[in-house]
Image (cartoon, rainbow, N blue to C red; front, side, top):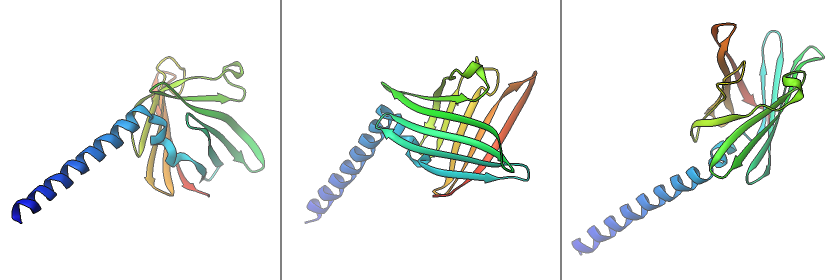
Length: 163
């Protein structure tokens, strides 16, 4: 009886390890799955602007995002974003109105886990890094950073889920 219980416990441990490894391997092969917590609408109200960002799943390899900042009733910035997975790589591709001649810029995922995404493009003027960190299921911090005019600069956008 004791041997049976020990065997049963060992079997449960092996099954748990196998399940954890399989889940980790699936996420490594499907990095967009780590970003699913972005889906929804987010906002940040500061003294000067209202920042809004919305993410939708287009398909299993692409999320579509839209981000804009309002100052009163004026839109002061606007961008369309594509989060695209090609093979086992994930790319953050914003197109910002009135920047880069209307061309998209590609940032590559360089670090991630289930609550943290880091995209980088060291060749871009500013930012060179875009980071999303999930704080709770209803809050996140988006951050852009890099060198601007010879100085390191970081801008953070703490956001709350709208829906």
